[in-house]
Image (cartoon, rainbow, N blue to C red):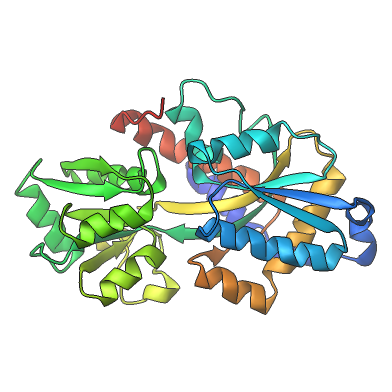
Length: 329
């Protein structure tokens, strides 16, 4: 078993139910003693990560009876906000919601990152995961993933694809596919999902990797065709869409994810309390429905399983980034 699979097995094996069973009124006494909990969100207002973070913040405010201050710090692909989490006072009064880039891929994309995700942050809980979807402009004469592969291989270098940004999950997902499938497409980075998807819908680019929620409106308008999903299993909201894994590339997986972290020196008791509270919140039916509507599948689990997951994702993406030559500075 390789290190990535081992990390995933540890993550999958972590029982959220076991985490939940340990919660009690006394368990969050330390949290309740703080008058304010500051939560830094490393994505812009209105984004799916922002929606998820605010849902959890609202429930923490209700459950703990403390003021919860939410701040968006989305600059530099989330690394500015993640650095602010890392350098905050480790007293449990500041935590943040970060994601794939700042926690796993940024160390290989920046020559100088002002924090070390493994040394300067304490994982609390993996919150949500989600796939990217490979889609093509409706004018492209392909209607399936296999047809896309054949069409692209016959035209090396003649097709291009949009991503939501250089070094983003959508960029790296396609680079991984290009390597495994032997494809040659030209990368065209955009500043976010909306312009990347709209350029594909308009036919300015041939294909795009993006999250399902940004694609569905233009799919319904008949301007884009969905071909395959990058998660290992079929996405609940798109059951008819095949995975790349099942379409001739066993083991292929390229998911986006997010989770709460704290400054590294935060007392372990406080990290455990926060993990229990957030796991409890994620199990609430109204929270689950709101998070899934934002395009995420709820994860949960222990701080240890989240730490193992981050290490596994670093190992997965480092060689992909090296082969692609992607840099962010």
